[in-house]
Image (cartoon, rainbow, N blue to C red; front, top):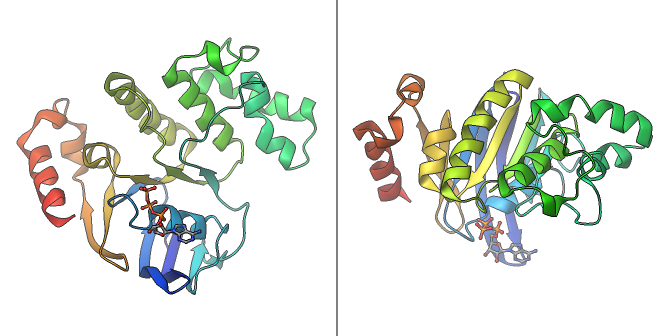
Length: 244
Ligand SMILES: Nc1ncnc2c1ncn2[C@@H]1O[C@H](COP(=O)(O)OP(=O)(O)OP(=O)(O)O)[C@@H](O)[C@H]1O
């Protein structure tokens, strides 16, 4: 049984159909990317999975239970999910807990041990502008993690980072997922990022958009130190670009 799946999700805005019969699934511990060009309907699909938007037809299933139109079941990090500049890093991180009516003291006690896990020790009392881009991103991911769900939906979380920082945050995120037993559905339009991070990639193409391909990335190849520079990597890239 998949951890999360969508069954025949379709969606139109007025008479403009954006998504048609989207069937995807995410297994426990996987990182699966949805790759598609700008405007294809990726965010629409995530908003439906997060319960923020109603599909015209179809269902979202989490651990065998329908969660269509239900928020709060999945952690969701929106594109450009910024930290509030007037709150400290701790103040930002505990926001989701406060929204769930947990007291400030309890929320801080829950968040405190996680700062080390997220590489953010000693930043609790700092304001976001005092942190580097990579640290701010880890703080935003920690805030998302405070929703305390097994599945994270991440909408282009790494797109604002420079190449080197992005690389570091990628490895860090894959390690973190293993440590905390998290499963992730990622939106990206960065083909290389999708190949480097994913166990599987769904390609979303066409109008209305459908899932036209599912590509599995070989776990053994991915572990090789120079995978990014290998012929296997270029072959994946070539294949995906020709299909998009
Ligand atoms: N609330 C809305 N009302 C009408 N049309 C919308 C609405 N939201 C999105 N759209 C349209 O639906 C299509 C898909 O948008 P969506 O934001 O889901 O795409 P996307 O793949 O996430 O794009 P990007 O990568 O640029 O963020 C676009 O044509 C967009 O203009």
